[in-house]
Length: 101
Image 1 (cartoon, helix red, strand yellow):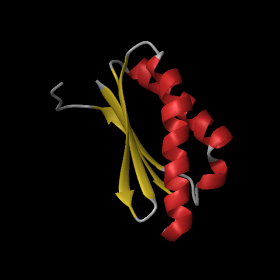
Image 2 (cartoon, rainbow, N blue to C red):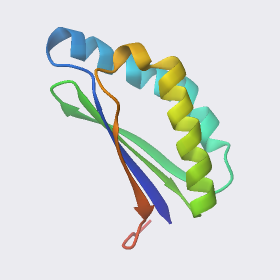
Image 3 (cartoon, helix red, strand yellow):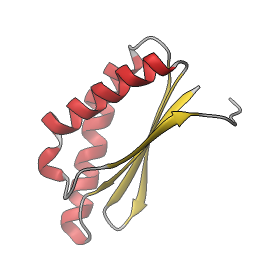
């Protein structure tokens, strides 16, 4: 199992709240269908941590699948969400060493 955690800053206040809503809508409608079609896809989560910060977690069965998913997400955020982000995301990726489905 391989997972990637990303942290996105969309800004605080009403601007951030509108950006959070738009980001989650685009992810649900555009990104998730593409990710779920990848071989080895297990799960994708978007978490609203408050104050205009969003975290996402993607989970794949194999490293190669995770890398493909990471490229897809990177391209999606660059092409479809760049105007919503205040900075580049913080990205952490690796093998999930403890997990229970």
